Amino acid sequence: MKGDPQTDPKGLIFEAFRIDRITLEECRSIFLDWALSLPVETDTGPALRILLERYQSDAPDHPMLTVMREGLVSMEAPRRRGGWRSRPRN
Image 1 (cartoon, rainbow, N blue to C red):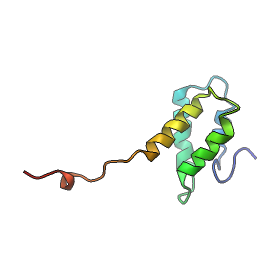
Image 2 (image 1 turned 60 degrees about the vertical axis):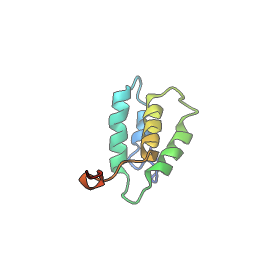
Image 3 (image 1 turned 45 degrees about the vertical axis):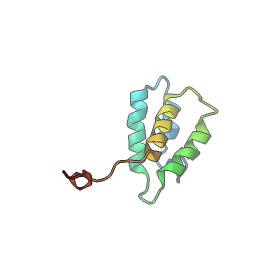
Image 4 (image 1 turned 135 degrees about the vertical axis):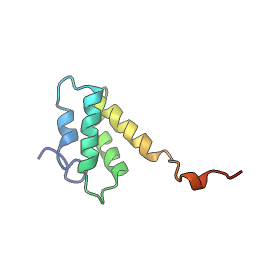
């Protein structure tokens, strides 16, 4: 089996770590495919943490690790919500 059914059901992250000379841009594309392929009920944050733990010691300089860390940080950052109603009125 290529990937873990819970964290990497299509084996996309698994395969990314096996591509020789993969670029950061290619990793970002694969990461997006990975995120979209997860079942709706999957919490992406814990899945990313598991994958980071699994791969970071074997390939500490791999660009996919950079992309996964960026994804984890951006998910944890608070997002501004609201639109025109959230603006103060004069």
